[in-house]
Each structure stands twice: as C-alpha cells, then as structure tokens.
Image (cartoon, rainbow, N blue to C red; front, side, top):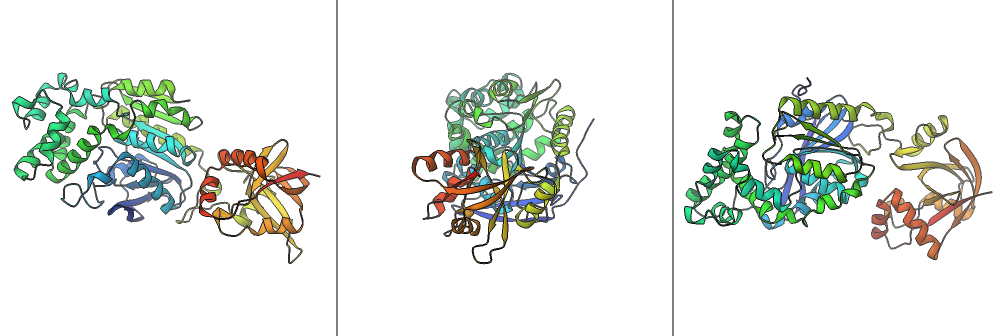
Length: 469
C-alpha cells in the first residue's frame, strides 16, 4: 500500500501581498522543472504543513503550498485583533490563488484539495478551467445548507454524542435550540479571552474528534492548540455562517464548466465531516469524474486506504509529464517552448513536439519577411482553424504596440505557414467588423487570456486569417 513520500524541505519560499492588508505565505518543493501542483489546505483556516509536501513525488512534481488568508504563516493571523474577516471570503481566496499562479509563473496546475480545500478547488476551477490540468479532491464538500446543518445541527452529533456534548458545553443551555453558528459567532468574537478561547477550543476539538474513522488523541491535541483553534474557529464560523458566499448548489450546478478537466474524487464512506453523499452527487454531474469510495475510512487524508488512492492518483497524473514540453513559464529552470527553441523543435519534428503547446492550445509556425532586413523571420503562434484556414491573433500580451510579425505581414502579406507537417504559402488578411468579432470569440475559446489582453491596451488587437494561396 502506498504511503507518504520522504520528508523534504522547500527550495524556495516567500510571501505575497494580496490586498486588504493581507500577506500570504507560499513555498515550493520537489522538482523546479516538474509538473505544477498546488495543495489547498482545509478548514478554512487550517494552514499547510510539512506532511502535505509528501503527497507528491518530489522528482516529478513542482509542489506549491500556501497558507490562505488569516492562518498558518500568513498575516494578519485570525487569532489577532488586526485580522479583518470582512475581506476573507471564498472569492478573495479564489483571487489570491490566481494571483499566486501568476506570481509563480505557472500556466496551468493541478489542484489538490481536501475538505474545505475541495470547495476552494471547485470554486477556482469553475472560474478558471483553462488554468487547471487536473482536480484531485478528497473529503468533498460544496457548502450547501444540508452539509453545514449536518455538521453543526446535530446530525454528526448522533454518531459522536460525547464529542457533541463537548461542542455544546460553551453554549448556554437556554440557547442550544438556536442557530449554533450564530451563537458561536458571539462567543468567538467576545472581547474577553476567558470566553472566546474556550469556545474556540471546543469548536476546533469537535472537528478533531470527528475527522478520523477511529478518533486519535494526537489529532485532537493538535486541534486544541489555542492559537490554531482560535484562527480556525473564527474563520470556519465566518465562512459557514455565510454559506461560503456561494449560491445554493452553485458548485454542483456549474460543474459542467469542468468538461475536459480530469477529476478524481477520493471519499471515505464513513466520513462524518463531509458525508459521502456530496461526492456521489458531484460525480453524477462532473463530466468524466472518477469516484473512489473508500470502504473503511473517515475524513482524514492520511487514513491508509485513502492515502493509497491519493498517492496512486497523483502518481498517475505525473506519469505522462515531460518537462521538455512543459506548458508553463517557470522561473526555476523548467524548459519551456518559447521563441526560437519552439520554432526549432516544431520544425525538426514536424510539430510532433510543439504543436500542442498545452492541452487544447495548438500552435503553428509563421514565416514572414522582415520589413527592414528582408530576411525570413519565424514565429510560433497560437491558432485556431476556421473554415479551412488558420486564424491568429496579434495580441503581444496586450502590449501598447503590435508585435513585429504583424508589422512584417502588413508590409508583405505573403507568408509561409507550417501546421504540423503541412507546409503552405498563405496570404495574411486582417479581418474587421462582424467577421472579427466572430473569429475573436473562437480564438478566445482556445486562449481565454486574449480577453484579458484586450482590457490592457487601447489598440484594437488584430485578428488575421491565413488564406491558403
């Protein structure tokens, strides 16, 4: 049975300001040229730990961990008065995650999230599906009313009555029939530490006592550390009171956006924190999802059979990774096909290497005449074939001026094109009006960032049809 990989240390770490006075901690481990994966910790408010690094083969993965707003090594910590929970929501975290991806120079990454991390993974993936290579979800949640009521309305308490009684202990007896999330909100934010600290420990202990198939004292002890307990209790209570700022059933209703993204759901059948029904219902609507129901497991990631399935899944997704054609911009040394190297390898292999710059994003090689030198100038460009002709976009990432290749073909519209092994002469034609709008929409389906580039520049980004001669 597969287990955790050996202990490793980060090769890089740092902090990233994400706005509203928040600064998140991040680290990278494993192979700088490996397959990018980001670990999304639970809670919300749980923070990442060195054990989470060990879920991935360090020789094949570029492992990114970070602490979400208000917890772990991110600041301000939610155990302190400086923390402002009004700027700590699901959508703030989705934006933070996208900002981290951009900061680390990653084009697409695998999302690995358990418990609350599965909620964040789904929310991010449904908004940025083109940035996600795979989804690995464990202990699946979507923060629907029935899920929250199960955990904090007495359902789970029927299975763990002694733990439930400890959860209720800080709540005055006369208020136990009220909405416990609201009652606990008052307790957790009471100015007197003699009130909010015991309440936080009771809240966090409830999770620690229910997370394992067989409760373990060392787990409970970790959950009741006072500073950790105060942060996770305040953040969880804040999120659950607001339903995660998600419309009811939103993550399940919008799962169709993830068509084409491989997804594996690993779920303990006897998970009391996030019952298996959620994973089951999500699997019915998530295109191509694999559901792994573990017959003798609860909620925790490190229960033996759950851990085996998680490691088996990440190993499988890494098996096809080839760093020499890796679709990412890597500041840490990964080889990325760009510029002259992209053109050279494309031509050497007739596009076997280089045509699929990343899944669903094809490229061609365009040869123009230099408008000043008269010499051949070659460029690897994203394209989409429409009505039998390749269509390209002169975006230059939204820069103020047109790219050089576009200026070249304005001077001489006769160009040479290579699409895989197919080589032909074409005449470049810049389209306008309704035709441009129609073709732009098709190209934006291939590379959605074109829409972002258009917002960055005052120029109209040209769309060019390469018509075979």
